[in-house]
Image 1 (tube, one colour):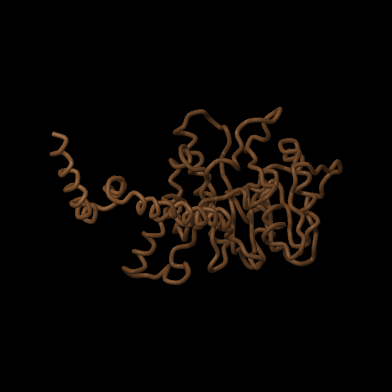
Image 2 (spheres, one colour; image 1 turned 90 degrees about the vertical axis):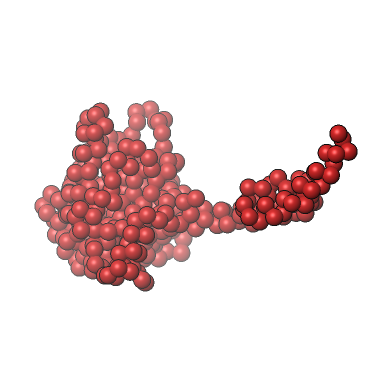
Length: 326
């Protein structure tokens, strides 16, 4: 029996290369064990070495959808740590920008805004009044002090993101000035209005639709609306893409939001800091950024075109996940 089994193993090892070519990758891990163990090991060893730098490169080069020439309106800012980091790390002309730091403190009262004669290129707004905001986010004092020292930045309080440009939505400073290249709402949420999931979903959908509608008239011709949401439920239930289509917007692109690209940024809960600290950290949770443009406007090379080709490209933009989502 032993003598008969040996020829069969030889025949199998000779026949397996054909099966390996036809079937694909599945037999490849099995056949080299019998036929060419040394060569198989040499073939498989380089793969991790080749893929690791590529994966590291993706993490080292996050997508930053802003440029120094943009006019940017940020709404729903919590403690202003995102605006601080965005300007200091990516938009400032200073050779040595000062990144925000949790260890920094400021015992004095921060200036509510910077008054300059020139129109600001960045306007950062919050729903809360200045007093309420500092009660909810004491750490905001450091960020506000930095932003108030920048002549190109203006801070506005008590700004309703669903009424932009009106008296309750920032007024003339938001409405005038030639429009915005980017209108940004990071992690929109109505707060804990109810514990019922279905109602929460509906309330947040209404928030987004109203925000979209108030933002569209304020965009420059090729401007975009940027929304960042956490991955998974209940946020996926909001169907942000469908909401945008409903008001005449389309997805230009989407990509993974990487909080580490904004040193010093900390996610601020809508209801304020958790007493005593602790709790989950939003900046460590997976999130995605969506860039919406008005339908029919330029989307970049080969995009935003009418006709069958343009529709195919727009459909592909909605379904594809870009920039290393893995």
